[in-house]
Amino acid sequence: MATYKIDPMHSEITFKVKHLMITNVTGSFQQFDATMESNEDDFSDAKIQFEADVNSISTNNEQRDGHLKGADFFAAEEFPKLQFSSTSFTKKSADTYSLKGDLTIKGITKPVELTVEYGGNMTDFYGQNKAGFEISGKINRSDFGLTWSAVTEAGGVVVSEEVKLHLAVQMVKQA
Image 1 (tube, rainbow, N blue to C red):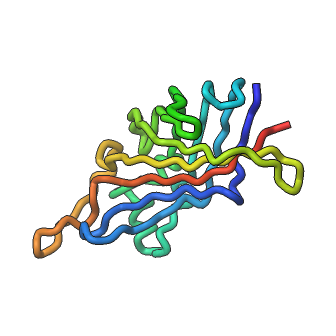
Image 2 (tube, rainbow, N blue to C red; image 1 turned 90 degrees about the vertical axis):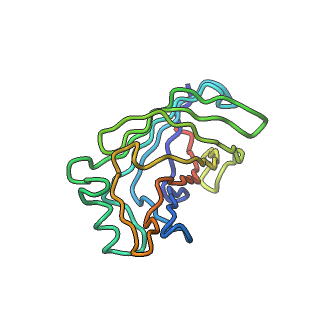
């Protein structure tokens, strides 16, 4: 069984949410951890665990970040971690997979399906074997109890329900 750990220096966990339905606000989690275990060289039997520290959320705006950590959104004091546990990792083509699993946000667990593009394997300067993946998908934030909403004077929605997820990760094979 090969075990891989995420390389946080060469990975990013980002999301985009439409603001006023005309532009995207991009956010990220700065602190996270992930493990992947696989017997197969093509990762077709991979089991993946991921978690992010909600208090590490960043949208480059301190006031907005504070709002996101509060009760209207993530309730970080009560629910400090966002977690994902895979249920299947299915090869669709040479470099594309379907990743299914259970995502837990704010104590609510729902199944999600993400698209994974395998970028390949490489040995770095330090002799570490690394595998690269780009992961994308969409969730509905209200499915996870992130239900805060507001409407502008003109009747426009302030924050969309749909959240686009994008993860660029390097996984390091453990000795």
